[in-house]
Every structure is written in structure tokens, then in C-alpha cells.
Length: 286
Ligand SMILES: C[S@@+](CC[C@H](N)C(=O)[O-])C[C@H]1O[C@@H](n2cnc3c(N)ncnc32)[C@H](O)[C@@H]1O
Image 1: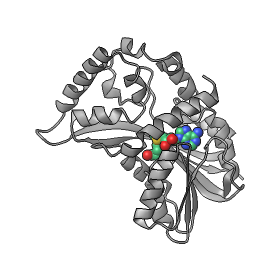
Image 2: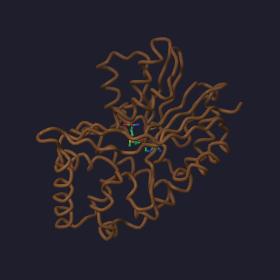
Image 3: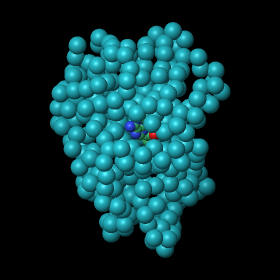
Image 4: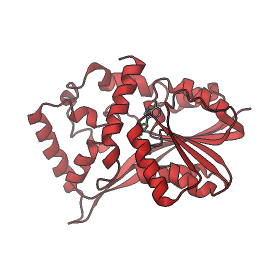
């Protein structure tokens, strides 16, 4: 799949997901975005660019910290995500937030016009992310910083899935995925620069950053029920798998996942899952 076709598949998937994105009884992107901003700690008055802002999991916490003298520009390739974020900005009366439908791979924005570039679980979708990193370096003012999250990829899981699901999703089910979404192909796409910490540091240094800090931290994800998680999984990366499974296999997998997740619940209470997240921060070198 060429880059344009890949981007239109990604855009269509996030357009479809936008209305219920992260609002289905699973708290994942929202706490991760908040934690990313806590780690990046923008200061009052900072100018922030949030790439692949979605509905604003990292954008709104950043807007709160930069305050009325700061500014946050959120960009996303999916118009429906921007619409949702715009509605939220209006609801909050956030006057320091601006939203634009824009491809984050090569955003046409003025050089040295930001103090911080962020991207929570978004730069992983950019086809040539190492090249995009070099462009973000150019957008940063002196001592500007970048902060983004990614999954912690392992060799034996479908990317985007918590490691606890490795045994629940048999490898032969993954064979239903089209070639470009097979685990091996996804590993080549992402792991070639993100999967190994050494490669990641080298890529960031090559893109013009210094003091590259990589921290893997568990996110404690609250899941109301097995059913809530499975419904939610249709709005994130696992949607790829669901949409290519034959109906009988899809139903079987649904039941298996619901049972496994419900077994983790404390009575009628929610289940708590530990999902590792990679937080990367770095400072521009100019
Ligand atoms: C997993 S979501 C994360 C959204 C948000 N940052 C959050 O944490 O909730 C990934 C987002 O990246 C966006 N995205 C994917 N490719 C993009 C690109 N080339 N340029 C800009 N945004 C992109 C998607 O539309 C989607 O909103």
C-alpha cells in the first residue's frame, strides 16, 4: 500500500471512530495524554503543536498548563476528530486552542514557531515518521522540546494490543489480515525505529534532537466490563482485525476476550489492566 492509500485508510478509520472515541467505558487515551503532558510540563505562555490531536487527550491538558498567554495548535488528518475537538474547545470556552485538519507528516507551519511538539499515540501512524521528526525539529524555537507516546512493541503481539492478549488471540486469526497489516509488516513499519530504544535514540539524534529520554511506564487502564473493552477495541487499532475476521471467528474471539476480561473484575466493579506505554521526550539541538 502506498503512503496516500495508507493515509486514506487511517483517515477513514479515525473518522468512523471519532464520535465514540475513548468514550466507551475504557479509560486509555485520556489518562495517557494527561500523563504525557505531565511529563512534558509545558510552561505558561508556551506555544504547543499537538500532532494527531484526535479529540484532545493531550491537547486540553496542554492548553490548561500554557494558560491564556500560551497557545495550542491541534492538527489531525481526520476531519471528524477535529470537529469533536472543536466542539470540546467550545464547550470548555478554551480561547487558547486552535484546530486544523492537516497532515502531520509535513505540516506547512512557520519555522521556530513552537516551544513544544506533542503527539500521543499518533506519530506511529505517520508513514515516514523519522523524516517528520526532522521537520518538527525545524518548527521548534531554541531549546524547544518534543514529547510523544507509542506502544511498547514486542515481537509476539499484534501491535496496539496489551501483552496480556497474546495468548487469547491465536496467531492463525491474524492471518486474516491483509498483507500490509500482518504483524510482520506492521513490525517493519513501526519497530524499525520505535521498537528498540537504541534505534529510537539514534533516529531522534539524527532528526536534530538531543537529551533523548525514553521511559516505559505502565498505564493503569480502567475497564468497566469485558464487553466494554471489546466494543472499545473496535474504535482503536484492533478494528483492523475485527473487520477482517469471518463472522464465526469474530464471535468466538469476542466471547473469549469478554470472558477473560470479566474474570479480572472484582465483582461488579471494573477490571484494571496494566498496559505498557513508551514516553519519549527530547530537546531540539539548535
Ligand atoms: C490513536 S489516535 C490518538 C489521538 C489523540 N492524540 C489521543 O491521544 O487521543 C491517533 C490520531 O492520529 C491521527 N493521525 C493519523 N495519521 C495522521 C497524520 N498523517 N497526520 C495527522 N494526524 C494523523 C488520527 O486521525 C488519530 O486522531
